[in-house]
Length: 169
Image 1 (tube, rainbow, N blue to C red):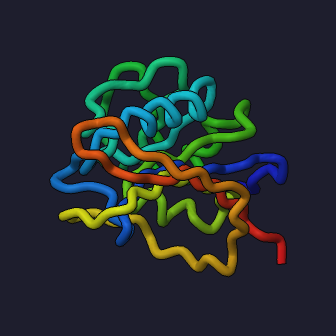
Image 2 (image 1 turned 60 degrees about the vertical axis):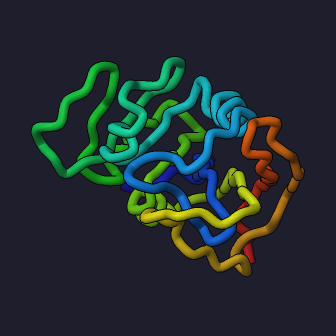
């Protein structure tokens, strides 16, 4: 399958200082500002995730086409489209010029080469984790924007919202 040139495949992730994504199939933190940003950016779009990510969320997210990428032919879930490979997943997004890849680690790796934009929440701390975001070669990416924040949650985490675009060089 050929990817349409006007399709802006976007990875969206929240990661710690050392690329931590999760621990025991759960997010490490609960930053309400990050969850609001996630919803604002992804609403009305397709979201592609792996089965483990879907199971950690435990339901389809409203207002989005939920696509689960899995090799498990018996997997079924309500209000979810199933794909067995990245091309099937992208075919399901044919009417969406900006599908979002929402995790987990293996799924990010599968889509990284064809991704045009990364919407990253960088949490400025180290965390115990067993799942990590793939290493990025930042020479391939231009930082478009970065805004720093402090969470008003009890854990007082600092974090940044960063947007990267793949550079054309």
